[in-house]
Amino acid sequence: MRNKRNTDNLDQTDIALLNRLQADARITNVALAESAHLSPAPCLRRVRDLETSGVIRGYATLLDPEAVGLDISTFIQVSLDKQVASALRVFEETIDSYPEVMECYLMTGDSDYLLRVVAPDLKALQSFIVDRLARIPHVSNIRSSMTLKQVKYKTALPIDLA
View 1 (cartoon, rainbow, N blue to C red):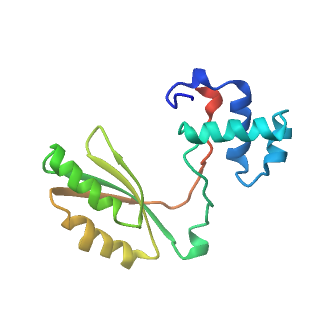
View 2: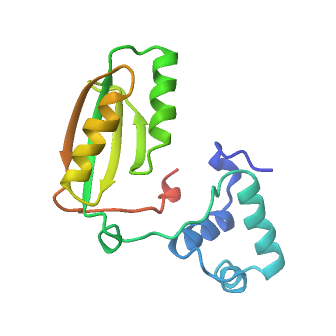
Protein backbone atom coordinates (compact mmCIF):
# COMPACT_ATOMS: atom_id res chain seq x y z
CA MET A 1 0.00 0.00 0.00
CA ARG A 2 1.22 3.49 -0.86
CA ASN A 3 1.68 6.21 1.72
CA LYS A 4 -0.44 9.11 0.46
CA ARG A 5 1.99 11.65 1.89
CA ASN A 6 5.05 10.29 0.13
CA THR A 7 5.25 10.90 -3.61
CA ASP A 8 8.41 8.75 -3.69
CA ASN A 9 5.99 5.79 -3.71
CA LEU A 10 4.43 7.01 -6.95
CA ASP A 11 6.26 5.75 -10.00
CA GLN A 12 6.05 7.25 -13.48
CA THR A 13 3.21 4.89 -14.41
CA ASP A 14 1.18 6.01 -11.37
CA ILE A 15 1.82 9.64 -12.26
CA ALA A 16 0.76 9.00 -15.86
CA LEU A 17 -2.45 7.31 -14.67
CA LEU A 18 -3.21 10.13 -12.23
CA ASN A 19 -2.61 12.85 -14.81
CA ARG A 20 -4.86 11.08 -17.31
CA LEU A 21 -7.61 10.53 -14.72
CA GLN A 22 -7.40 14.17 -13.64
CA ALA A 23 -7.90 15.19 -17.27
CA ASP A 24 -10.75 12.72 -17.85
CA ALA A 25 -12.16 10.76 -14.92
CA ARG A 26 -14.71 9.14 -17.25
CA ILE A 27 -12.06 7.41 -19.34
CA THR A 28 -12.57 3.67 -19.66
CA ASN A 29 -10.11 1.36 -17.97
CA VAL A 30 -9.11 -0.01 -21.38
CA ALA A 31 -8.30 3.47 -22.73
CA LEU A 32 -6.53 4.41 -19.50
CA ALA A 33 -4.45 1.23 -19.66
CA GLU A 34 -3.50 1.93 -23.28
CA SER A 35 -2.45 5.49 -22.43
CA ALA A 36 -0.10 4.16 -19.71
CA HIS A 37 1.15 1.20 -21.80
CA LEU A 38 -0.44 -1.35 -19.45
CA SER A 39 -2.89 -4.15 -19.90
CA PRO A 40 -6.33 -3.54 -18.36
CA ALA A 41 -5.98 -5.82 -15.29
CA PRO A 42 -2.75 -4.27 -13.90
CA CYS A 43 -4.10 -0.82 -14.71
CA LEU A 44 -7.26 -1.47 -12.71
CA ARG A 45 -5.19 -2.85 -9.81
CA ARG A 46 -3.03 0.29 -9.78
CA VAL A 47 -6.08 2.56 -9.81
CA ARG A 48 -7.70 0.57 -6.99
CA ASP A 49 -4.44 0.80 -4.99
CA LEU A 50 -4.37 4.57 -5.54
CA GLU A 51 -7.99 4.77 -4.34
CA THR A 52 -7.40 2.53 -1.31
CA SER A 53 -4.30 4.46 -0.24
CA GLY A 54 -6.15 7.77 -0.43
CA VAL A 55 -4.17 9.26 -3.30
CA ILE A 56 -7.42 9.27 -5.29
CA ARG A 57 -10.03 10.69 -2.93
CA GLY A 58 -12.98 10.37 -5.26
CA TYR A 59 -14.50 11.30 -8.60
CA ALA A 60 -16.78 14.25 -9.25
CA THR A 61 -18.67 16.03 -12.00
CA LEU A 62 -17.75 19.71 -12.26
CA LEU A 63 -20.67 22.02 -12.89
CA ASP A 64 -20.76 25.55 -14.27
CA PRO A 65 -22.07 27.58 -11.30
CA GLU A 66 -23.84 30.14 -13.50
CA ALA A 67 -25.55 27.38 -15.51
CA VAL A 68 -27.18 26.16 -12.28
CA GLY A 69 -28.14 29.63 -11.05
CA LEU A 70 -25.23 30.34 -8.68
CA ASP A 71 -24.12 33.66 -10.15
CA ILE A 72 -22.33 35.04 -7.08
CA SER A 73 -18.96 33.73 -5.89
CA THR A 74 -17.42 35.36 -2.84
CA PHE A 75 -14.37 34.92 -0.66
CA ILE A 76 -15.08 35.64 2.98
CA GLN A 77 -12.49 36.13 5.69
CA VAL A 78 -13.74 35.29 9.17
CA SER A 79 -12.10 36.10 12.50
CA LEU A 80 -13.09 34.54 15.79
CA ASP A 81 -12.84 36.22 19.19
CA LYS A 82 -11.21 33.07 20.60
CA GLN A 83 -8.75 30.75 18.92
CA VAL A 84 -9.26 27.83 21.27
CA ALA A 85 -10.02 24.30 20.13
CA SER A 86 -13.66 24.37 21.22
CA ALA A 87 -14.41 27.62 19.34
CA LEU A 88 -12.64 26.38 16.22
CA ARG A 89 -14.52 23.07 16.38
CA VAL A 90 -17.92 24.78 16.71
CA PHE A 91 -17.15 27.07 13.78
CA GLU A 92 -15.90 24.25 11.56
CA GLU A 93 -18.82 21.94 12.36
CA THR A 94 -21.31 24.72 11.68
CA ILE A 95 -19.64 25.77 8.41
CA ASP A 96 -19.56 22.15 7.28
CA SER A 97 -23.36 22.08 7.45
CA TYR A 98 -23.79 25.07 5.10
CA PRO A 99 -24.11 23.89 1.49
CA GLU A 100 -23.22 27.30 0.02
CA VAL A 101 -19.75 27.10 1.57
CA MET A 102 -17.69 25.38 -1.09
CA GLU A 103 -14.33 25.62 0.67
CA CYS A 104 -13.14 26.54 4.14
CA TYR A 105 -9.53 26.97 5.22
CA LEU A 106 -8.00 27.62 8.64
CA MET A 107 -5.49 30.38 7.93
CA THR A 108 -2.45 32.15 9.24
CA GLY A 109 -2.42 35.95 9.17
CA ASP A 110 -5.11 38.49 9.92
CA SER A 111 -8.12 36.19 9.63
CA ASP A 112 -8.77 32.80 11.13
CA TYR A 113 -10.71 31.33 8.19
CA LEU A 114 -11.11 31.87 4.48
CA LEU A 115 -14.35 30.69 2.89
CA ARG A 116 -15.43 30.42 -0.71
CA VAL A 117 -19.18 30.85 -0.86
CA VAL A 118 -21.61 30.65 -3.78
CA ALA A 119 -25.07 32.20 -3.94
CA PRO A 120 -27.75 32.81 -6.54
CA ASP A 121 -27.82 36.57 -5.94
CA LEU A 122 -26.77 39.39 -3.60
CA LYS A 123 -29.87 39.05 -1.44
CA ALA A 124 -29.07 35.38 -0.76
CA LEU A 125 -25.44 36.24 -0.02
CA GLN A 126 -26.50 38.97 2.39
CA SER A 127 -28.89 36.58 4.10
CA PHE A 128 -26.13 33.99 4.45
CA ILE A 129 -23.71 36.49 5.97
CA VAL A 130 -26.16 38.25 8.29
CA ASP A 131 -28.52 35.45 9.28
CA ARG A 132 -26.17 32.51 9.40
CA LEU A 133 -22.46 33.31 9.36
CA ALA A 134 -22.58 36.25 11.78
CA ARG A 135 -24.58 34.19 14.26
CA ILE A 136 -22.01 31.43 14.67
CA PRO A 137 -20.61 31.65 18.21
CA HIS A 138 -17.29 33.51 18.50
CA VAL A 139 -17.42 35.12 15.03
CA SER A 140 -16.06 38.61 15.61
CA ASN A 141 -15.23 39.94 12.16
CA ILE A 142 -16.36 39.19 8.61
CA ARG A 143 -14.82 40.64 5.44
CA SER A 144 -16.03 39.63 2.02
CA SER A 145 -14.64 40.09 -1.49
CA MET A 146 -16.83 39.29 -4.47
CA THR A 147 -15.27 37.86 -7.57
CA LEU A 148 -15.67 39.84 -10.78
CA LYS A 149 -14.23 37.25 -13.13
CA GLN A 150 -12.70 33.83 -12.75
CA VAL A 151 -9.30 34.11 -14.39
CA LYS A 152 -8.04 30.62 -13.62
CA TYR A 153 -9.65 27.54 -12.14
CA LYS A 154 -8.05 24.13 -12.07
CA THR A 155 -8.91 20.93 -10.33
CA ALA A 156 -5.95 18.90 -11.57
CA LEU A 157 -2.99 18.95 -9.19
CA PRO A 158 0.46 19.41 -10.76
CA ILE A 159 1.81 16.15 -9.33
CA ASP A 160 4.85 16.31 -11.61
CA LEU A 161 6.06 19.16 -9.36
CA ALA A 162 5.96 17.11 -6.16
